[in-house]
Image (tube, rainbow, N blue to C red; front, side):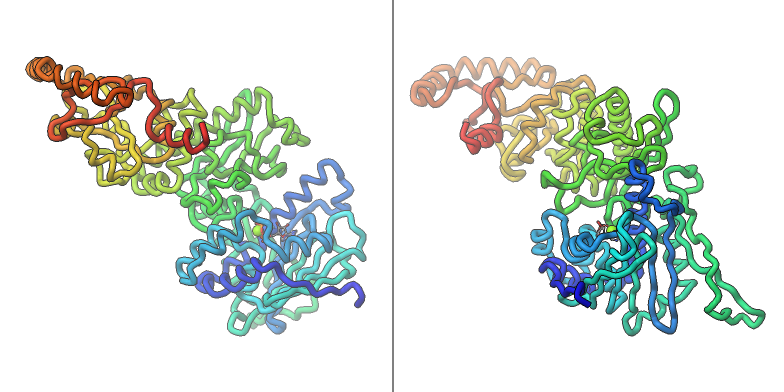
Length: 566
Ligand code: ADP
Ligand code: MG
């Protein structure tokens, strides 16, 4: 046929296909979750586009996914009546990977199947997972609104290339036929497919149907020529609309994987229905691991927005501040208009008040995680702590709450592990101590060995050791916690207040008087290089120390400014 073309996969797709087939063999059944997830997304997109163009529904608004098989032909088919794909879309979406940072990601893979399967999980294998169980995949699709003769057939053996042809396809949507590999015949089975659907796709808000199993008296399957009756296998209502008590932990986890395109379980979720002046339901999650592109500007962030159960957009960024960009979830509003756009979302009292409530919910969810599951919180902190540290600057109003969620290394902690909370610190403050002491440094080793710590070590006072790049900037926005102010021990004239006894003070004053001559001579010798030479009581072992003035820029900040040419 003249419309038939053979095209090569993008290099990254070829690499991914190879890796996937070799590292995901222990979890083959996920192909069905991926294909059903795509079908559900396609239904969401059709519903959304039909809001402004009802003709797209072509008189068939009952959206569903159908899964069926043919034991003899060894095929499993997944069919939907969603938005479908045009020929160009099939080439673009099923021949390339559009995600940013793909090259970098593939570079990180080690060749060790176990480690790689974790990484691939994070990346999301999507459609290509069909090739875990199939040695040939045929996709038939027609984009809603295109005529029946503008269907497309995409076909590939998952090696280097795929074939594309224009075909007749009367029914709108997509049909994917998997030709099972030798040894994978067991997937062409009603019970197996039903259990996989129940396990992974129960939360999908779209009916997933399979042919009704008919049995004769002898228990034999009935003749195949009768048109099948369909029955819905999953619960088929949007998960967040269900009562909390009817949702299992598994359901919550699988729903997370569907919306976040992640493979690992989340650490926590928070599901809330808000009624009253504003009406909306939110379901928020804390992921278990940072996406490979967390620090990329264009990385996906934001919530999935629905209005009255109709999908409106992915990555609605207006509902959470940037420092919570790792939170995933859904928000379904009854107050916004169905034709709401990104522009409209930029402003307005409804959005503002939802944003502030969702921010609070997210912080409360983290607080609860820290209290109930300290190990999981430690995981969270390792993955996302640096992002949360942006919080006090971005969200001054919540800085006390955010500060409570921060974790630090300290002189009484475990090496450089950041696991000391401010509450821990305050809980073990020395008698008479009313300040939170900290020291910033380039590395943990450098900070932990700083002469500034000598007097604190002698008195048994804990000092937080801050060595992340962002820390000095963070401390510019954190002035106190629980009524206690933060003190940078490397700055100015260290006032230990009540921590010093009268004798200490007297001895220090006398020493200062005694050594005044020496300080003066040193000051003259150092000249312009220092602003002052002072007799210090900070040191017990070292003879001298360089300290910063109270108003000076910290060392990290100086380096950042110098590096940027200021
Ligand atoms: P993702 O779902 O993360 O975008 P996938 O690899 O699963 O990645 O799918 C790639 C793209 O192929 C989808 O984004 C979509 O554009 C298209 N696609 C896949 N399956 C379908 C389908 N059943 N109907 C319409 N488009 C589809
Ligand atoms: Mg997908």
